[in-house]
Image 1 (cartoon, helix red, strand yellow):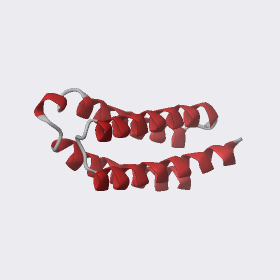
Image 2: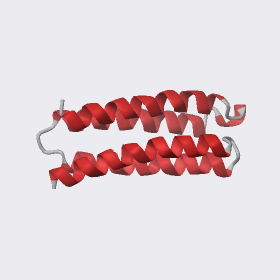
Image 3: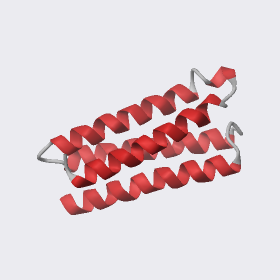
Length: 112
């Protein structure tokens, strides 16, 4: 596995742990809708990261990863807009996802 992939995977696992706690506080009606989408997106991000670290040609896989990260950002913004998370959780969560985005962007630049 590439060094970038390992560092990125560690950051994603941190976000996943934080997300697990954050989505538990969602209203019961949203635990099977928005919370499920967030968990599935994080799972897909992990799968794509591992796939990317194992592939020789990484560009398209990294672009797919970038798309999933942007989708996760959208879901987090939606959670905040619907007041399922407070301002502090939104800031922490967004900061963590932005770190993942920066690492992915750097990895994508090094590949192209």
